[in-house]
Length: 83
Image (cartoon, rainbow, N blue to C red; front, side, top):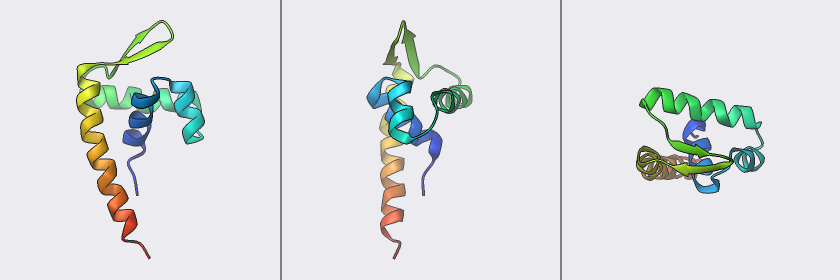
């Protein structure tokens, strides 16, 4: 069980690269961009600053990463209940 958008965001926030995130998760780079764009639209602001080819987390991105880590850990706890 997982929230794909949060998973994509958390990996991207740590890798600071949509290309690396796509490789790690086995999805396309445009799919990563779409997940991030949907989250940014839903939350009403940028999660990353895109400076040349470098990504930097915004304050909102830092806050979301902290929350996402907690939510993803809870999903992992649910998965651990499975036989």
